[in-house]
Length: 369
Length: 99
Figure 1 (cartoon, each protein chain N blue to C red):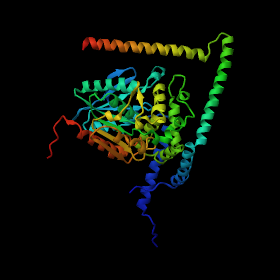
Figure 2 (figure 1 turned 180 degrees about the vertical axis):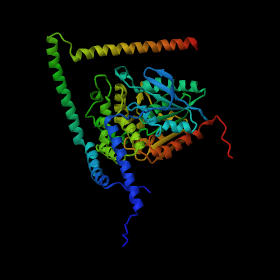
Figure 3 (figure 1 turned 135 degrees about the horizontal axis):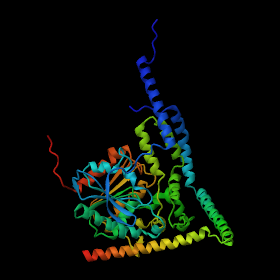
């Protein structure tokens, strides 16, 4: 009598074969992960330092097909490492934008120590950013640049462009950039409520230590780490996933100190007084008016951002004085905007498209045959 | 079509999601903020007291304490800032002469 199995024998063999192979890979990857022998290289896209002042450096990424001008200068945040934008060869925002023919540059702040503790927001807005933009323009041989500020780098870019409208900036893009700090309750609660003065959060170097920044992020979702480990276990057989996971895990535990004076100004002027939204923020004794920004502006927000929720970022579009102020609200999280599969498929192509529409093509369009 | 997550993962998520929400909302509560700020103030006070006593003991046997090292570090930092300011001035003077 013939026995009818619910699954065909070939399929059973294929499943067993797949599960055995996965188990072997899971064991191998698990051992490598535990031993820490397979740390992925991060920030690998080849680049040159084209400008340097103190710890700030401007990098220009190498490319053999720069098809658009002016260059795009990415201004990074003060609290995290900039390699999130060039995380892994398979997950690199910089590489993606280079592939679109853009001339990519990145302004990296380095790691602040006691010497940088006295850096105020004006140090970045009035000194480093204008000089870096000038250097970028000179290196690329263009009249101006496109500035793309990410997270707190977006705040610095807004401050700089508002205080120096004469800067050679053709377009300004703010990505996941908070302007209404009332919309960032989860991140700013301790400082806002006044239980801790900004001075109480500083360490002996005069900066906010990276652990404090990391703990603030951790409070947003205390079980996130456990959830990430579960996802790792589930995908431990997948070499590509493990590489990407390790790069991201390394970045999320790799914060940098926040310069003390800039933190104090942020806590008082931006968080407690919500100065960017109310227009009460003053730097070096002068009011900051975002309405002085008149260049084409793009506000990129992430729908699932828990760090800078849409409510905190959206008002920027109405605050700038640009006749052309666009906004993009994309289905991604804060980091997912620049480092994820969604970034590669949706967010970065849309941002690149906007930049290209607001740039000059420097090489002829490839002919359609 | 993406396969559904394994049973263990579904069980994990069923626990993690509500637990994560509860912990996150607890982390945003006034009580938690009060507890953390109280804890930090207490820790600072204890650290100051320990430092005061150990400094006295170390100075008694003519050894430098952490606070002495901190003082020196501050002076070095100040010197570094001055050097930085001078090199900026020099850079600008050079740029002015060349340009």
